Image (cartoon, rainbow, N blue to C red):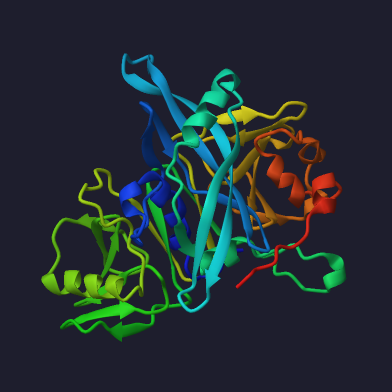
Length: 374
């Protein structure tokens, strides 16, 4: 389960890939992020880590390629999208003091586009045009993403299997995680306080809460919201934000000249939580030889099982949870108690990485907990 620290800096990886002008910046891009490679429009989604052993990091990300346009039943034109998965790897070196990890020799190892396999070699070649620069990501987030919650029995580690608060968003969104209730501290600007137990920028002035994310301000009367976009705020808030960012105390999203046209959904949690972002309505892809389908247009591992009344299953940091719908309630499912079809996921499936979290599969027998080189 993800810890309550440094959640958003991992987003830096694809931000920097997609925005060559930000190689040295510490901005965090909202998801998905658009790029154009040799005239082809692509959207890169938040990466998911698979392993980090010694100084080699491996992961994968969902890629959406615009292949044309189509007209729906109402006569409205829509983008025609091919969804796939790209596997990435990079060498790492760690700066414990700055809590940063440097990624070098970034490599797009392979791709899989199940509904557009004829063009996947072309898409691979395009993705390999992404600038091969040195990248910085958060050590805190890498460690939390790679935490192994399903410990091996011989380790005699008691695991808390209570489900986190699992949130689904179908438009741009951000999750602000606090380590308990806000711990307020004077910001140095008159009347403005900053919550110091979160890596997001959360400010308070005159009893009103403010969040700055992706070039936009949002306000609410309390943590439960409702959060609304605010076009202008008192100058003291802007000064407090700039000071916190300069001191590297918080992450606030991209500091780009272009504005965000669609407000983000703001979620705030004071306990363990997981945000699963889906790019619009869920797009389902059947898995051959099973009654399972997975959601293509999300970087998370999200499945439905037709044999279990279309029940939803998600994999969060090595642990499985089930619910009747995206609204929950979510229940922990031991890997050994998963429906049999999960162990039948083909090894060449875009979702084959989850096999390492399904007991009895060759991938699970061969997986070892990652070691962190710090």
